[in-house]
Length: 203
Image (cartoon, rainbow, N blue to C red):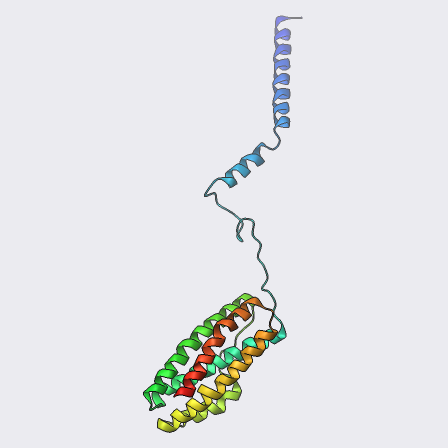
């Protein structure tokens, strides 16, 4: 064998050995890139590419019963109506005590509506945007009155009769509902409605 042939044979053997060693090294570390990516993701402050958040899933709104839906609709409609009636008292009532009572109604019913709006969002159930149609006649009558006559009708109708209805509605719903946030809202709101009734009876 000539010197040049022997040298070529040695080079080919060396290249074959290097390639085999490299392949064996890759075969022994197949998960290295995955481990590297996992380690990067586990670092504090590492960016999470999941738009819903790491380890979280987007949950559907929980359903509520027809009875609960009817109650939420009626409770929201009642609050909208009483806030509208109370707003009329600002300009039409004569007795300062009636005006102060109307301001209390607006404040407390706005707070109650805030709780109902959260329930609406949590259960994907829309609330009414206006007072119910069956209250339109009462609102129209209040709009036609002023002074002492307004005070009398507002106190008897909105302050007493309507709040008696509110209390009955809430007491029935409290016994029947199995929805925790609705029951909690009633527990918070029912004492306020009873106080409104007592305040109207004392005017």
